[in-house]
Image 1 (tube, rainbow, N blue to C red):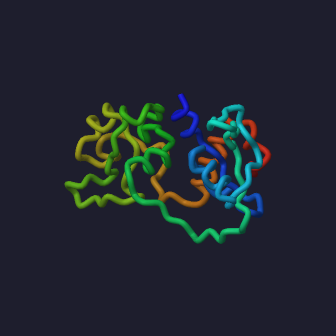
Image 2: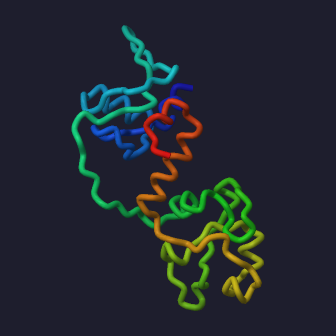
Length: 174
């Protein structure tokens, strides 16, 4: 039970109150206890020691401003699925990650690269139907052209996650 609470997402704000990241409650608690961040909002959950109970943060703010460089995300299955919101880019069904594959829009058999612009989330049915053809040859259409993960994408994901946590809303710029 405690392990689940420690994995809960926590919104991380820069000293300027700008949302910059999401981390696990365990990491947020460590940052607060080390004096690197302060808890702006707390959840109802707490962790207990022999002498004290500490409420887990829901939103933390770094005490010193951190310059955030232009970030690029690693090309990975998880990041492609997040970018595509766990939605098949051909039939537009949203599925659990275990029921999705990655599809090369231009097949690897035709020198298609493993790149942000050529990989999309795809359900097994659509992936089998497309095979080693281009979407046009298979009579299929992409819901959205694949693009690299950008700062805009990261902020959009933070906003989407924030819809489930009312305490985050006042820190997110919709």
